[in-house]
Length: 193
Image 1 (spheres, one colour):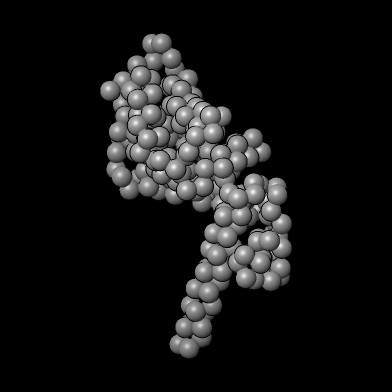
Image 2 (tube, helix red, strand yellow; image 1 turned 45 degrees about the horizontal axis):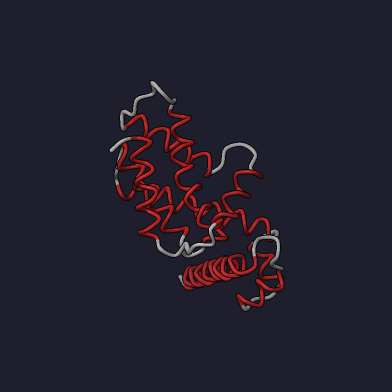
């Protein structure tokens, strides 16, 4: 019985350390950019040793991949929790994506671009795109002018286009409600109200 408590305590401590590494790395990545943060900076910020870092992650790239995977999984999980389908499902998905983008705008964009460009095979990013196609079908969106695949590109483009335009214009990405409003207006033009 005592052994079970020790394992549970060890497990909780290991999980807390893992989360701390990811949280501190996210802050550093947001501040400095991907590829510009060293293991030493991460271990210093998380107050751990190098060996502890490597007990959790094989490399900074593995850490980045896990952060991206968790971010997309959180968006997909939240979508399921909200229980929306069709057009409302797409709006719920975009809302969660925007809510997650605003605290770490630079990191989010870098993670998405890295995850999409570097990925080989099925990834959480491809699941996100497939889900949008599924919801376009659920919404009964007409394919006369554009296929659901093309409409999915337009939906994702509403998000990426808005975020990239904010970067280009050096405008703040902290106002989630403003960004949601812009994306919703674009989506209304793409898939209807």
